[in-house]
Image (cartoon, rainbow, N blue to C red; front, side, top):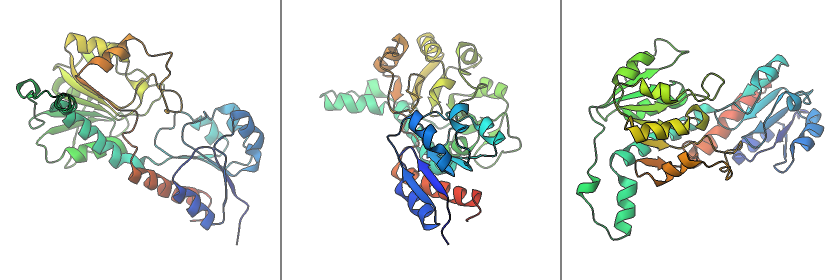
Length: 318
């Protein structure tokens, strides 16, 4: 029997989500062009809302959803949703970090291997007619210690991908205990400072983690390190990263996310690209990608499938 649940999609997602919700009797309303004012005016009509990152769901907007039972984010991070406020209203906040964990793990590893082996630079040189071998002599992962901060879906997926490379993987997670397994050894932050050759960030953006990795943080590492950030741009202070690179404390960086990204992650704020970013652009010790670590064809569909299950469970329709 059909039900009266209407779901507002304000961002495009894989069509599998719409298909599975409609099969369960929900009505899906795809409105990718509505602005914040239009959404606020129409929100009382809906049981749920599906978003990626186009619009920030703050208290003012969420409070208009007097019939909302869920907010579903097609992705992992929840920083664009006032989750605490929504929960006080009894609204379930759903996301799907399980859906792109594999993509992020593979991307982080791919960037690291490319950096260690000068693949991006060598590829460009060969295309320009330069055959430089000695100048592109690489380094091996084997024997290195990789430190991971944040051992959730993404951090654990990266650790799993490192198995077989002969590395020691240490992970620190402030909110988890007793998670050592065949892929990783649980460690304190101090142990990471003492032992890591490579640091990979897998933490959400919160008030606690905003610009957590700054000059003071980087100076605590006893070794000169390589840095990977596939988490959120604003957990890393770019100015301080560049300073650390100039000083030799950071030997190279793999950066998929930048603090200069627009709220929707769909571009860079062209008016906010300072000198530090220009340094990253020019450095052959840096690999940059446009927030695509979790952005695969497979993850797109997996996120939709996972969200469908969570939404139907939330509405007792599973």
